[in-house]
Length: 144
Image 1 (cartoon, rainbow, N blue to C red):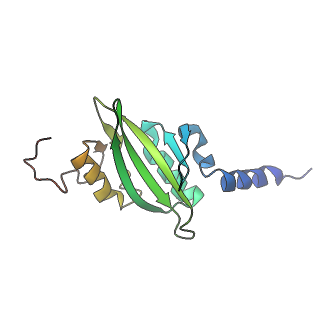
Image 2: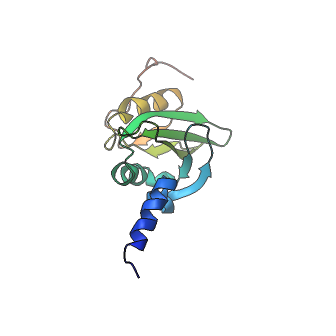
């Protein structure tokens, strides 16, 4: 009996399921045309993105988008691999409509700095531990 079987199985899982390293943090899957997406627990944003960067090779945060729905907000992190730009995943993070707060990933991906500020400015999601969370596009006096 080979002792390599579990390692080979893990490698195969990672190749077919980009979210296998964060399986325990995923609450739902979504199918998108360009990239698979996983919804994760709001309290696990840093852990999930750090793991995808270190263990799955998603070392580039292409952008962060934010959406408003009737009952929630969402931050969507679009990750890619510099080694293979065709490898892309989206990580969806829900935030409560009454208290839209999420963890900042600026310490993991520097590109999150401006993207999270934009989501804060235009949608209203606050990012805990963001080093410079302030308006980036709209004037300070903007009401809306």
